Image (cartoon, rainbow, N blue to C red; front, top):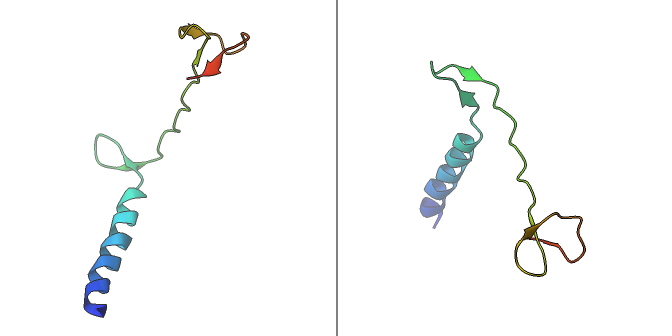
Length: 61
């Protein structure tokens, strides 16, 4: 049982390190990653069409 757990744990640790790698530029040098832009919230009115979020009856879509 232990022989099966060791490769699984090792692959999880290696995979998480790859996801946390910093960004690279076109030349392959490490640079600071640009900030992630937040998604804009769009709202729909009671009729199902897009509307401003401040209007009465508008809900986030």
